[in-house]
Image (cartoon, rainbow over all chains, first blue to last red; front, side, top):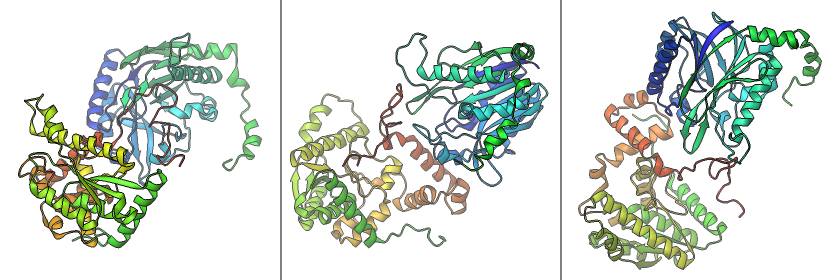
Length: 283
Length: 277
């Protein structure tokens, strides 16, 4: 893999698909001008996050004109963007689509919906049921949406599938303003730890785009960043404002990490079988 | 033609039973035995007063007439008729002095601002009377008004509890007839009486009959725009109402609080008002 990527840290307008598509197009143009081959938008980037009863009103079928319009934009740059997907059965999913060469190449539906604290996603969405790596012309990728990253079982299938990088996006609200040494929000430090842990244990590039802006008193804290296969922050967007980050990532860093510590070679996924047998049903 | 079930008709006897129980149980569990409301001479406050009289006993309900010097005298006459028909206690506070005390400081105040000032003066009086009377303030906004945002925030929309907030105007009338409200109140044109000659329907620009049916199909029955057009509504009307509902959402929710901590009031600090009772 040798890939130039733009992280597009935007502030979508709640429920306004047309306006958000325009914002995407402008960001895509900027990413193309920067020489990027792929642009990653935040979770539900086309719709906004706390949709409540708007969820079904702005849901998109995969063959909808709006998504086709976005796909059209992907002829010279690949695009990963979030939206509410309406399945043929009428179920709603929190989905991320990968658009390439004018077509929708892959969709991941958020598996781990958040329903606690300020979140109520199980009320709005059906849950996805798989983590499937996909082959882009740029490399082999795996998608994770926000809470997916918190569960250790999410990135592992991608690790086993030998992905080149994990594409993670979220609408992570900022919280916890307790004074601390590094001057970061408590919630941002948690994300940094999570991203670094996944990068370190999968020895894979982790690219994370988080959104910014406020929705009814809750702010999304940005801080989009790239963590290298050693678990170190490679680059990030500072501050809580909209912004873009252009990075150039290659597989060479992964190879070096795995040469020093061959975790993939030594993985023993079959050991899971015995453990999983005891957890066939929900526990 | 409506499909079976697609109708605003309510079982008025059942609704009466539920709302009487609602007022009695929620007021008592809050540690109160009395309720107070502003009596406008209109149908909404009449229905709330009648329900409260049944729930708490007429003696435990205080109706406050809140005329302003430009209010129609008929409003007061109808308000008195209501209170005396129900046998509830009544009081009158002329808000002219308090309202004009402020209005005179702002000579360029337009009709809308003035209407809001009057509504908020009435709120001040009602909350103070509630304190002196050890009572709770009952709201009298119906579902049509709430959805259209045809209320003054922190004015007539302010209350401790509202028995008719989930009834469309049409349904309030059904309940009023069931409760045998005085004919004069049932037949007169609805008005906020914030300025001379005002009627709700002329100010809103559409009839309650039309908008109630639209709101019912859209909100309760989840009709899409296409469904509503097929049901015979005009696109411009539908869009106007949709825009109006969305633009007045701020009136229907508590003030938004900037979340900073792990646990924030109204975000993830979540308890019912009935908490701890």
